[in-house]
Image (tube, rainbow, N blue to C red):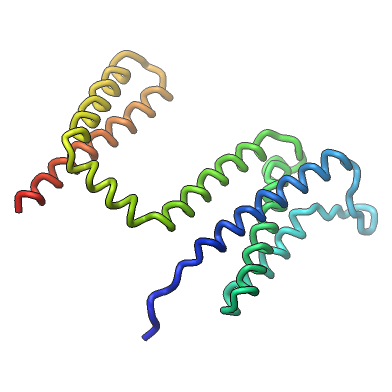
Amino acid sequence: MEGKPKPKPSLSILALIAFIVSFVIARAFTTFNPHTIILINGSIHIHHFWYGLVMLAIGGWLGISFEEKRINRLAAILFGAGGGLIGDEVGLLLTLGDYWTMLTYTFLIVFLAFASILILLNKYFGTIRREFTEFLSSNISLYIGVFMAAVSIAFIMETDDVTINTVSTAFVIIAFVIILMYFVQRIRKKR
C-alpha cells in the first residue's frame, strides 16, 4: 500500500506564473506583430494555441511519468506556459475568429482568480477550516447570517429584476447555511 501523496504547492504556483508570463508575452507579441502567422500551403493557419497544446501534453506527460524535482519543475513550467498560450486565444477559439474579443480577458480574470483560490485552499486548508469552525461557533456568525437573510429577503420582495433576485436568493441560501451551521456547532459543543 502506498503512502499519503505529497502536495506540491510550489509547482502549482510555478505553473500559474508560467501561465501568466506566456499569456502576457503572447498577447504583447500579437499586439506588436499582428500579421505574423505561420502559413502552410497558403490556407492553413497555425495559431499559437497549437504550440500550447503540445506544451500541455509534454508537461503533463513529464509530470506523470517522472518523480524528480527538476523534471517536475520543467513539467510545471511547460504545462503553465502551454495553458497561457491557449488562454491567450480563448476568444479566438470561442468566437471562431475574433482574437481581440473581451472574452479572453474575462477568461483570464476568472481563471487566475479560480487558480489562485485553489492554490491557497490547497496550501492553507487546515488553517481555513479551523478559522471557519471558530467563526461558525461564535455568536457573530448567527448575527451575520440573520442580517444577510433579512437584507436579501428585502431585496427579493422589492424588485422583479432577475439578476438581483438570483443573487439575493443565493445570499439567502448562504445565510441559512451559516445559521444552520451555527446551531450545529452549538449542539456539538454541548455534547
